[in-house]
Length: 350
View 1 (tube, helix red, strand yellow):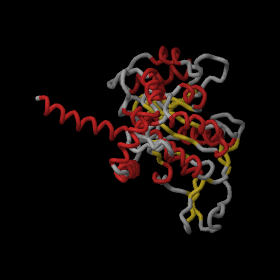
View 2: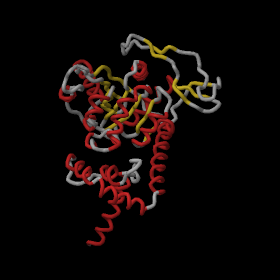
View 3: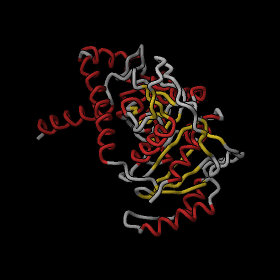
């Protein structure tokens, strides 16, 4: 099977960057259907098409190789340019990037995403591991959520492309979903994706979700691939936002292993950072935040679906540095703490 449409899509992403447009690609799918794999394949192809690597100082950047055409999705082509000297050391010992370096482009949390948006060379891809860490609609009051929305609004001058993912498109913060997302990639099953762009007319719902759900209908884990292809064709023929569907290849095992290693490394670094903070300092910061940010905490609880602070709320409002706003304890760690205490309480009460 060939995958020309994967290349066409990535070329179109680059074309939009060159038109000074924001590019945020949000991939969604049921759990286990390959959301991360979709982002990996999009960013891999992007780096392979446009990435340059200095063999002297190992600096990587994206070439000025341009995508030309009238803007028609299927009529774009890459104009191959002459290899450029390294902008960092001036060396002419330069080669095309053969494979993505996840340590450079993979993002674990919003703090790292914030830094990369400023630090990466222009036209770089960014691969946030889980969009739920900064795009969830239920986290509308979180400092990081507000910060990301402001940052997304101004990042077009760097011509960056974000390839992120979240389990359900409706979970995405409304402003990010309706005003900032450039492409929605809906994975129907492993390898089969539908590509959508928002309706830019004056409509209440730029994604026409009611119509999408009606045309999509119902399907299940055991639905045959032939039926899914009929569904994709139906959406392509009748939905105003769907402009393509295609297959993407499975991520090679050795590449996925490198992705997992980079992700696990970032998680380990995050936990190591937590351990470097004295436990008494954590308690002092939590006490200060509870005293001084109580109104924010109550407001967040009131606007949520729950009658208590969630772990993410605790991470944001209670266990964050009052000065730098950096999280000092991750919400996953807080969840583990509660599990440990529950075990102790259950033993005592038995």
